[in-house]
Length: 360
Ligand SMILES: Cc1cc2nc3c(=O)[nH]c(=O)nc-3n(C[C@H](O)[C@H](O)[C@H](O)COP(=O)(O)OP(=O)(O)OC[C@H]3O[C@@H](n4cnc5c(N)ncnc54)[C@H](O)[C@@H]3O)c2cc1C
Image 1 (cartoon, rainbow, N blue to C red):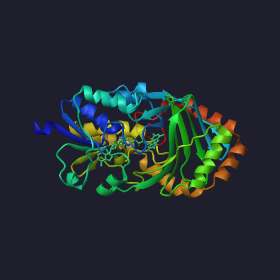
Image 2 (spheres, helix red, strand yellow; image 1 turned 90 degrees about the vertical axis):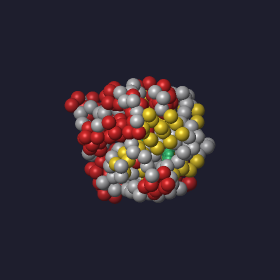
Image 3 (tube, rainbow, N blue to C red; image 1 turned 45 degrees about the vertical axis):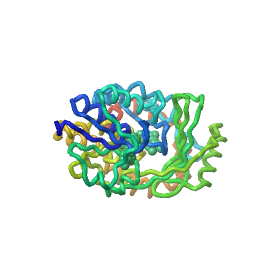
C-alpha cells in the first residue's frame, strides 16, 4: 500500500492536474499547500492570465476538460509607448486564477475533491520536510522565491505593480512597452474582472514608471485603476539548463520545473501539461521523460534569444521599435501576423502545451 501514496507540495494548477491524474490511477493523494485554502498564491490571485493554447489538444493530453475556464480573447493590442499594433486573437485565451467560481483552480479543485484527494492547508515545504521527502513526492510550488532558494534552483526575481477589480469590459488584453521596464505592462479582462500588471525581471519597477503607465492607460485606453500593490516572485530564468523533471528522488512540476516560455513569460500551458507529466513520472517514467523533453525543447533557444538578443539589442530601444512600426505600418504588420496564424495548418498553436515558437 505504501507505494500507492503520493505527496504533492503546491495546490496550484500543475499540482492539481497531477493530483487528478494520480487519484484516477488509484493513488492516495495528499496535497500540502502553504495557503489556507485553494486558489494559488494570495500574493497575486485572483488574477487573469492570457495565453496561447490549443484547448482541445491540451484537454485531451491532460484527460481533463478545461475548456470552460478558457475564454477566447476578442482583442489583443501591443503598444510601443502610445503606438498600437493589433495581433490576431485566434487560439489566444484569458483564464482566471484564484478561488472564484469561473477560475481554473476552482474547476480543478472540485475534480480533486470528487476523486478523494486530501488537502493539508497552511502546510509549507520547508527544510525539514525537504530533507525527508517520502517516496512519490511531487513539488509544484510555482513562483515562490523562498522555495527556489530552499531548493537551490537557479531563478530570477520579477517585480511588479499589480491591480485588479471589477470591470464591464469584454474579454481582451493589451500590452505596453516602455524603457522604464525590461518586460511589459498588461491588462487582461474576463469574467467581469480586470487584472493589470506592470512588471520587470531582475530589477525594481519605479513609481515613476507606474505613473507613466497610468497616464498611458488614462489617455489611450480611458482606464484608471487606483489600488496598486507591489509584488515579487521568482521564475526559472536563472539558467538555460533549467528545465528539469527531478529533484533527487522527487518530481518537479509546473513552472518550478522550467516549463515556461522564457520570452513572454507564458507559464499556463506549460504548467498544465507538466502536471500530467509529473503524474506520468510516477506511473510511466520513460514516457514522462520523453514528454518533458518534447515540451521544453525550445526553452534554451528562448532563453538565449531573450537574454543575449532581445534584452541587449531590442528591448532597451522602444523608440526605435516604435519608429520601425511607423515605417512598416501597423496595418501591414497585423496583416502579416494574421496570415501567419491563419496559415499555420501544419504548425498548430502550442500543442499540447509549452512551445516557444508555437510549432510542434
Ligand atoms: C502575476 C502573474 C501573472 C502571470 N501572467 C501570465 C499570463 O498572462 N500568461 C501566462 O501564460 N502565464 C502567466 N503567468 C505565469 C503562470 O501563471 C505560472 O507560470 C503558472 O501559474 C504556474 O503554475 P504552477 O502550477 O507551477 O504554480 P501555481 O499555480 O502558482 O501554484 C503554486 C502553488 O504552490 C504553493 N506554494 C508555493 N510555495 C510553497 C511551499 N513552499 N509549500 C507549499 N506550497 C507552496 C502556492 O501557494 C501555490 O498555490 C503569470 C504569473 C504571475 C505570478
